[in-house]
Image (cartoon, rainbow, N blue to C red; front, side):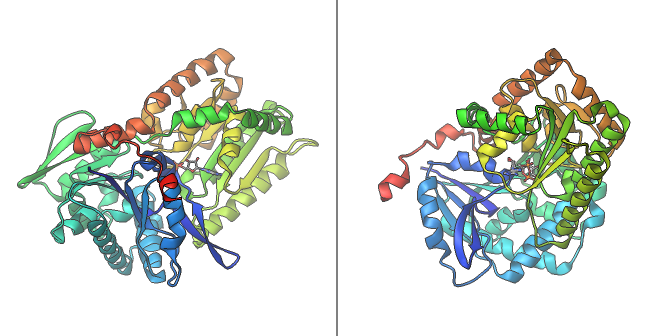
Length: 486
Ligand code: ADQ
């Protein structure tokens, strides 16, 4: 029986040092949100780094309870402090992350980072080789681990491999800045299937490939195409990631969540709520968004006292100076707007810097009249989809950046904006505020339909069908391991 082996930089459970003791915590971020429901109770394996760069910690012991609960095995790859610094903070987050989000001026192209990236990829590939069989399907995730198929092949290990890139793939003029561009492209050609969030990303990859390897021939049309390269071929596809629609929608209908939603609305005296929810990252366009809200209050005095902007930001990469500076910038901007526009009994911007429990996040989504999702660039953006799923009354408005992958799917019924155009975003907010109930319902009902149909299970099935002509149903659920072990 073949199993799914998921490989990603981080495991879905993270080890955190709290009061001098290591604790297991459910990991955050889009990838975990998307993949945890996929492996649950299917007896597969998830290989990744635990988040603890220390030796002498009984990582396996700490994670075994989590594995039993989750219904699949967690297998850790341990990293040293300097590997974490150079491979994760360095190559992944100071080179690939900004470059692939079109922010090349933020890149630091250190040769040391590249070497560490290769060493760590090799380490991961050794673990994959050891923990899988030739029957398994190896599904590798994201830009940290682009060299897995390359190293498995160079070790002589035969595996069926698929790679999914969660972030955008840049155009050739940006990608060509990467000093190791040829080696990265070559490594990616070793996968059997390469998945991207949008057709645009897939096209960008094909153009970079043809620029660097003119002998590569791309054939076919539609979502999945074939590349012939020498005596082998592999496939490229666009697979827009999604969410577990029913889970969000039904949580929003829970009595306690409805109660909490009401409390949130009451707290702002039933004024309209504009909501932003993001990991605190410079790609998410949070300062630009606050400036747009500021411009909205300046240009449209009719909205003063009638609307609240709530920004929820999840702490992210707090060790990095750039992220600390971004946090300060956001806090100053919030202070400035509130200083300028507050009235007795009304504070225009509410800013929450924390991770919210799932039901609390859903209550915020349900309470919001307008979701303001304006990343400068984003692979997909799950927040946009989560907002639609929670909007059971279907009378909210989604304002969405044209540079989010989600725009390719949701453009017809979301209000698309350019996040750099603060005047344009302010105007969109003003218009959305006055949309009639019928207009809101017509658009939101279609958005919900789209997200309901193209949900996370549809995403997994499309990837697996393209990769191995199987669907999730071919990896049937098993008895919860939890009971067998106790
Ligand atoms: P991320 O950049 O992390 O993911 P995103 O798609 O926005 O981005 O997902 C963020 C996730 O974090 C959402 O599921 C959201 O619910 C959760 N979250 C946000 N704020 C939260 C809070 N305060 N408390 C708790 N949870 C919160 C990367 C890519 C994206 C891509 C995803 C999936 O950068 O472009 O959509 O992977 O492929």
